[in-house]
Length: 86
Image 1 (cartoon, rainbow, N blue to C red):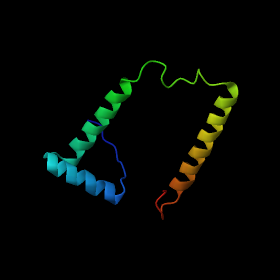
Image 2: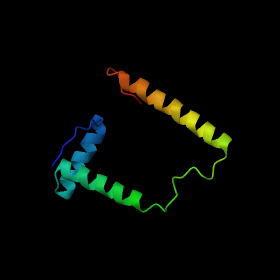
Image 3: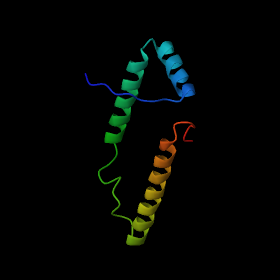
């Protein structure tokens, strides 16, 4: 099975470990099951739910600019390894 690395803030990791212990599961199993549930829930959205077809050209432009600003802020925060991004 393929693997990946995920970096969690310490409080999140502690909470994951606590929940895993309470449920008698490994941390990995808890994370895999949570990801699987998220994927299944996403599949429940109606067709077209995430479409931008209902937006005007102006609204779409504003959305795209805001998304670019958000992405730039995330990238800037990720470059700094000395401080948490948020």
